[in-house]
Image (tube, helix red, strand yellow):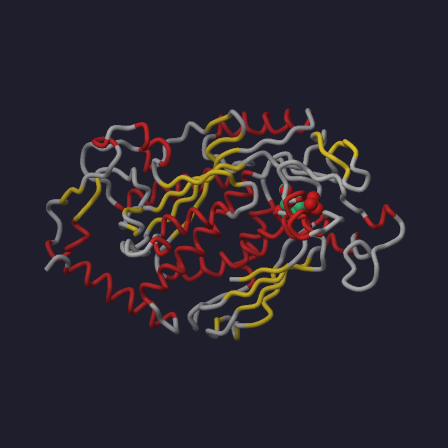
Length: 412
Ligand code: EPS
């Protein structure tokens, strides 16, 4: 997957390669998630301008992928207001208001590091691409991957865990401690679907209605104070077959690949899988997931009779999926563009100055959760296709079913 596009340029472009042929795909499959990405209490004025819609330019014919690269276009409606500033040809406008030079780097943004690296005097040359606007293009790619996963019975959902100091009180299935009968995968899936519905109904994607209200109030208070708020979101995928990723080489470990992909979401400063940092505080006896044998089931179910007493590992052991739901959490720092800007230096005059400000989102954690879904979908689809191959959806499905049949027989 490759994306291009500046935040206030004409459009965002995505090319997705490697999707099997014969995957049913329509613009609505992508638009649904683009719209979800735009939502969330705390979003800024830009989201009132944009109405992100995808145009499928290539790789799809009569509603199905061809196996060729899929080209996707999302127009920036705001470009109409930035045409002189962002003109592809000709010099920068002489009028400073139209040129919109950025010479006062924002602490926490890419501005200064990018300026130093590329030698740009106008830091807009950095910010335009560093902006989280780019995530619309990534959500588009992830939505294509998600269509493939849906066809193969893999579901993905997200929820906001905390915003600022406010924490959700909801206990997801993977937080349940060991005890009693091993949880039935279908009951676990149903519990995640319930959480997803609750999160979808919340203005901050939080499945706990009380915490949701407090989060909205915290965002409003932050906005009034000229502040921004970060937080933590969680993405879960269930229905994932075991054995995606590999233990044999560092860069094939799926947990490592997920950490890279989640860390690359703008403003993410921490990633956890399963218990994550909490595992470091526990004794070994309370940090792993005991392997239990279900009783009274068809003996032919082989590997599927092996259940786990808990899911502290977040579905990954040795860099491979283990058949349990994959659980990833990411921590977002507060957005770096502040209404009351931090101390900086004006590079045009080399004098102390407050950082630049145009407009900002008070909180983008709910949007980041939707981006996380797309990132997880992408990584899982990639790992799944490594396992199954398949030039067509039919071949991928047949190969996956063959592997699942092998698991039914395991360890015979
Ligand atoms: C974003 C578009 C941006 C911001 C936000 C994400 O629009 P603008 O820069 O025109 O206000 O709303 O970008 C950031 C938070 C950031 O730090 O870059 C979007 O489409 O998601």
